[in-house]
Image (cartoon, rainbow, N blue to C red; front, side):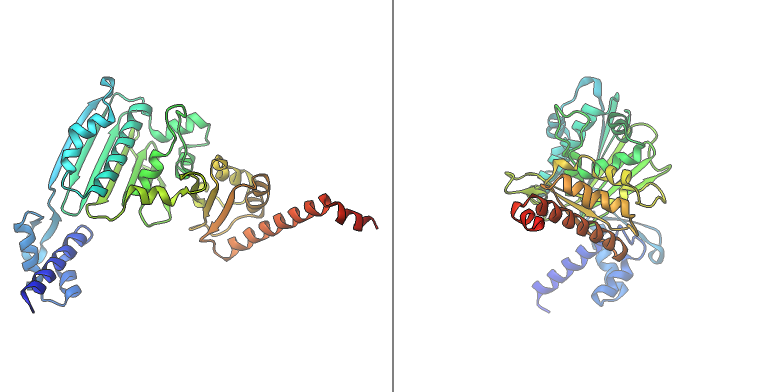
Length: 368
């Protein structure tokens, strides 16, 4: 094999190791050998090289060795919120230089995500201090922000009179939600969560997570979440081809001057525990505030059944009252799709009946 090809293959093998080692810290040698058809000894040589380069750290004996990515950057700092630190100044003075080795598109995403999340702490947390933690490895960067305030889900619950903190996650998932509409559009958390590979919020009794490429938003209730304040974690691959513009455009409309006109609602977030989606009140909860969008995608992934009243409220009653809003159902299994089709058929019949009554020619023929 030519020297150039040997070097390229070695780089490919080591890139595979770096990409997989976090998910398989004890099995990475075997996985590498199997993937590239090389011996365990050959895989270990690549691992030793990465350790020597400072990209990996190792512990244990050879047969029981554990590998981890070596952090290239580890930094944290406390901020007293009474001092009114500005998010752009914190970014420029403290954070940006830690990430300056990253590609421009990745740095742009971090600039947007960090400043939006830190500004939320300043304007909404009602806390006294916040800590920022930055970790950069050869493959990924993670930024965590935690404050000691009221808690994001509790504040949304109180501001909008919601049933519980879990309901606040459904509202966040829609986008355009803010407790201070004079100063915020409510787009920051929505777009930041879509730009990152992994985005997590923990607060009160609720754990919320969104992963890029996964249509589902995960929500859990229990002891994982801090009882006081809000914890946010953002993670992004250092070499992603993603850009801010691609994410914005995915939810924008050219006809609306590229405004935020489209949203995707994970319908299962309208469920509480083992509740079935059967009632009109549940449908109204799901549809609250979506009159701010032109296109609403209702993602039924993970929903096994819906009731006739739920479907009728969404796809006939709401659709009839909001003809300018396009409702699109996706990932619906057969029983769910049947209910949706029943409601949309009823809507079409309702509209045809109204047209029939309004048409004087048709009315004349009926009278004859």
